[in-house]
Image (tube, rainbow, N blue to C red; front, side):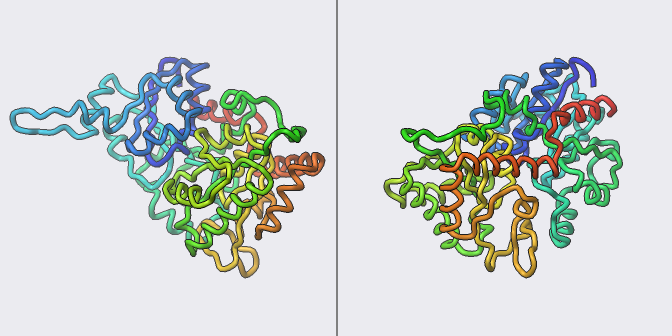
Length: 395
């Protein structure tokens, strides 16, 4: 990579992709003065920018241009023969001076046409989140291997991974030897400070008597839980508990979750102080005192932001391909990794939350242990961006 190189970032599935790659773009823009064009394949995903105001603000700053399906479609014109240009035709025309790098995630989409459109571009493939692929069940591994289109990715592409535990799986899946464990750049302290404006950990923060506790409620798609009633009862029990202790709930919707189902639940529960987050998990967590999380990798963002995380979920009779096994029942990989305090019932949740909010020493130790567990599994020692840039230079 050299100064003034042109990067095309393709966003396919969610703002989780922006969340992962944005620290890299920020660094390359600041230190290398590269040109960055962002293409959102879905207008619906682009329109969710109102739920990620912090990410959108910085993405807009580092990008020379953000292109959407709609902005390209508006340029579509018919000639006398009514020949309509395709989105790829228009994108190729718009970027007629060429692209040096294509960045995209691995999310089950065939990007071959983009490789053909910009044949000279080097390809960089990155995770769309912090999920640990190395912990997947054998069945899920087989399903993933059929849907990620790795046979279409150029053999000389750079494949970035978040964890050493993912290496053997992706080597087997891709036959690609150019694999680099970069860790997750958004976990670096310098990025957390850039994004949130908060420096240092927050384990010593105490809640004043006059201050309402703020609880970040990290979500999980209802469709992945066996019963509709199970999801609703879990969510409503959190609302009710928060109402009783005078806490404010900030809901962070899962990218693949229907917001309407949450809105209906909020409207059903009268008297609770509930609002939807309009920033990333990192930023939302930096303004909260504790996170209550359904099974989600977003728990890691809350830990990095410096608050303790309680995973509230009863795995009795629950099965999902991303759950882990513990004896004869399911659990989460986050519990197995020691990243979260477990709460299987509302009584356990109330006990843990009250202890965190009212016992500074317990809060401090919980944050320390969760941070220690995260450091065990991931590179969050400040070298992720350095590792990544070195890999780009060698590409």
